[in-house]
Image (cartoon, rainbow, N blue to C red):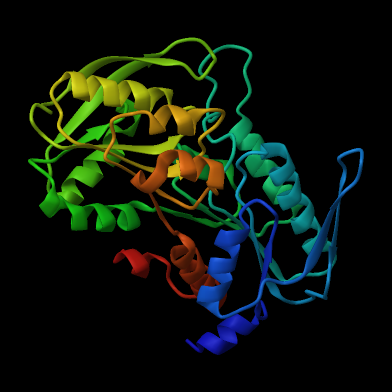
Length: 327
């Protein structure tokens, strides 16, 4: 296959970013040796948004980098309006690059008279003009089925396990613990990759708020270093309970690894007060300086920029993304 010919059907890469994750977008652009294209994003006094591109994208392959963390609705609308702006300017192809997808926990009707908001978000992204999407570690795999456009659902698994693997020689009889049974399958992958035993925390969520109660620990943590793994941390309630539980059961040092540092409300302060040796996460969601200060030197943020950038390059060139993961 003539890669250059294949790529030219969509034109050159044009990178755009909203205001949600500027540092991550800059890292992606740096990896690709490309600039972030200019755009104006203006918020009127009535909170309506106005976006204008600095240059034409007619016939170009456009990528919009925007995470949808807090402020969720501002960031989501920036993503949608920016994509529609590109569509109306005759972009050849538009890809939504959303490291963290909002409303991913609302993925099913688990009680009467409730919405499936994750499906609504997928519909909105498509209607706004996206031809493809790229995202990272969805809360539930079935969300892929909500999209009728092709996409790449990536994972920070290799980034996190590579970092943890380098720390294993300094740990005492380590064990991987899933923060809840919903993460059990993915936690098993962590344990297999690190060649470690696996345990689980059983919890039961009650009501429609973010509170959950840890009930039981399945597995042995006595006199062991514990690596608690999860996909995202929102309010931090589950992690507070998990850390408390494993310490009560005799754990030594505790490490907490998670992909998306949502850290709503006072989650950073709650977690920083825990007897945790290190918190390991990614930059899929930006962590404010105030929150980083609360954690001090115990917070390690690994970038997903190189992963996103390489997938953007391969998508533009019509090359396999699975080859990155030996698939």
